[in-house]
View 1: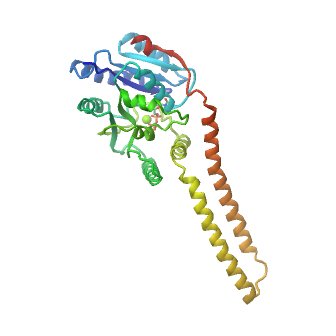
View 2: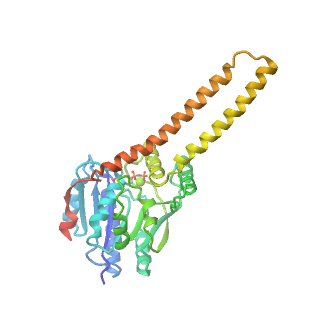
View 3: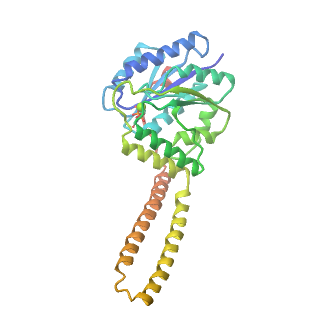
Length: 318
Ligand code: UDP
Ligand code: MG
C-alpha cells in the first residue's frame, strides 16, 4: 500500500486555534493510519503565511512533539491561495493524496476519512461541500449565493458551497501546479483540471477561536479576482452598456427636438445634466473594468514569484 496523505493547512496568525487544530487533525490522521487506510508516513503540513504572532513557534514545537507534524515558512504574508499552492507543491513531491483545510476548524475534520474513502473508490477530486451555512451571517450567505450565480452566468463552473476544503490526487495536484497564473483562484481552477470528482457533505462550524482573516474588503477583492481571472464577460458587457446608453441618447435626442419645435422649451438644462452625469458614470465604470484587466495583465506579465519559502521542514522530514 502506498497511500501517503498530506494535509495542507495554511496559517496566518492562528496561535489561538493551532493547539486544537493539531489535536483534532492528529487524531483523525492516527485513526486512519491504524485503520490501514493511509500510509503511516502521512503528514500534516502547516504553511505559515507570514504570521505576526507565535504561530511558527508553535508549529516548530509540534514538529518536535509529533512525527507527523511538519511546517513550511514563508518570508512574509503572501495570502491564503499562495499558501495553499506552496503547500500542495511541496506535498505533491512526496505524497499520493493531498487534502487542504483551513486552520480554524470551521470545516468538519470528520469529513477527511470520508474524502479518503472516495479517493480509495477511485475519485481524483473530492470536494468538501457545506450542507448548511447556519454559522455564516445573513449577509455572507446572500453575497456568497450571488457570487456563485454571477460566476455561473459568466460561464465559470464552480461547485456551490465548496471552498478550499478538498482532496486532490497526486496527478490532479500536478495538473493544478501547471497553471502559471499569478492571481490564483484555486476553486475555479480545480474543475478545469478534469478527472473524476465526488462530493462529501459536512456542516460548517463557527471559527474555533480568533478572528476571520477575510474581512469584507478582502472578500470583495477575492470575488473580483475570481471574476476577472476567469472571465472576459465584463469587457463584453461594456459594449452592451454602450449600445443601451446610445439608444437612450437617440430617443432623448428625437424627444428634445420634438419638444423644441412644439413647446418652445428653454434651456435643456435637465437633459444636459442627466446626460453628462450618466455618460460620465458609464465611462468611469467602463474605465475601471478595463483598468482591472490591464492591472491583471500587468501583474501576470511581471511573472513575479508567488511566494518565497524561508524554511521547509516538510521535505526534510520526508
Ligand atoms: N489565511 C492565510 N493567509 C492569509 C489569510 C488567511 O494563510 O493572508 C488562512 C487562515 O489562517 C485560515 C484560512 O486561510 O486557515 C482561511 O482564513 P479565514 O478562516 O480567516 O477565512 P474565512 O473562513 O473567514 O473565510
Ligand atoms: Mg475560517
